[in-house]
Image (cartoon, rainbow, N blue to C red; front, top):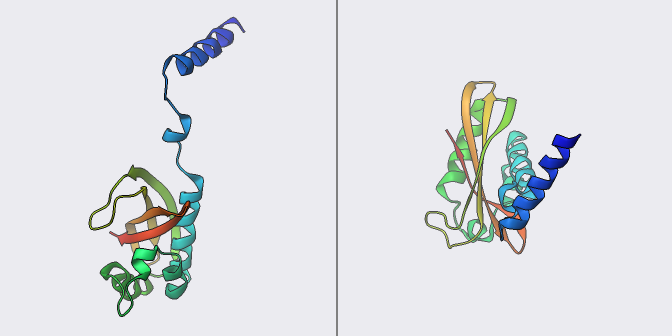
Length: 141
């Protein structure tokens, strides 16, 4: 009991002694993970138009054509078959992304097993727009 008390006191002192430290900065944004999972599940159903509706305004600003990643998804995803298993692999936060305006980005990677492709890495890049996480891009390797 004494050790637990000392541990709790030490933990509290560390948080007080280190100004500006925030647990929230180290914790993944649950809403972002849910957005990434919802997007991949929509792709799993073959609802590419529905998945497109979950993307950012930059993506949806393509009026006559979709970006390359979307065209590849529509062509390739049906060939992979059903998802057997998908697990969260990695999260990383970024303040910028290649070819896009600076902002709040989160890369969410999943290891995925498809019926016709055993080892895959799915990466969903999300951007925060008006306080909500939306899909910026999707990559499948």
